[in-house]
Length: 85
Image 1 (cartoon, helix red, strand yellow):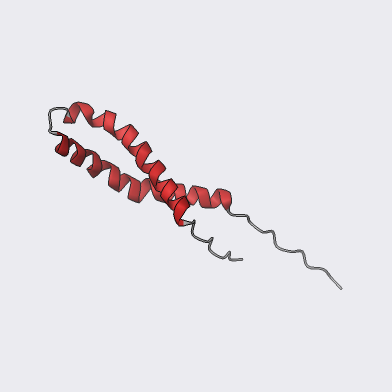
Image 2 (tube, rainbow, N blue to C red; image 1 turned 90 degrees about the vertical axis):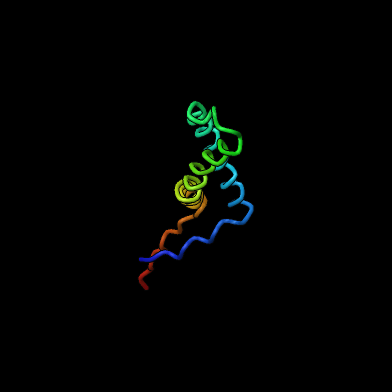
């Protein structure tokens, strides 16, 4: 039995998911790389931060969060029982 693909989340939900993923990634990565980038000027620190955060968000976090929200918001319908006449 095949299931129809779940509808894509609204643009508002995707924006919220993306914002959450970016915020979480920056919150984790920034302190982790701070010792290594402390001597760099601000634009280079930002470059280093975004070089790590953007691929992580685009390829890992957002797809995982979209799968999670789709799985938790999709109602799976049970097949209707067949009746014998």
